[in-house]
Image (tube, rainbow, N blue to C red):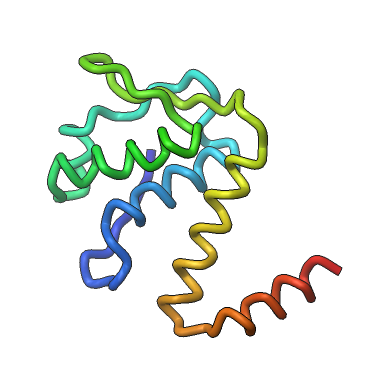
Length: 116
């Protein structure tokens, strides 16, 4: 699993991590039932704190994209409705828009235009 985080970004590391995993689920690189790396292993790989990884995993759990099992790790679960994935993607879009200082009205206009 190739996930990247940018410590110099104003976006919190846990959000970057959750976004990367969410994207891998959406595009099919991670599939239902697939086990994610342990929090410790991923933290070492990305050179970030284990609690940061756990925070990102909890975000994905709350979105219904992963199940967390104490002592057994995180497992992708995309059996829930597509609206959960969509909610996560919208969250990523809004975070990206904020980072680029796009006004809410401008973002709405872009979405309306794309929806047509």
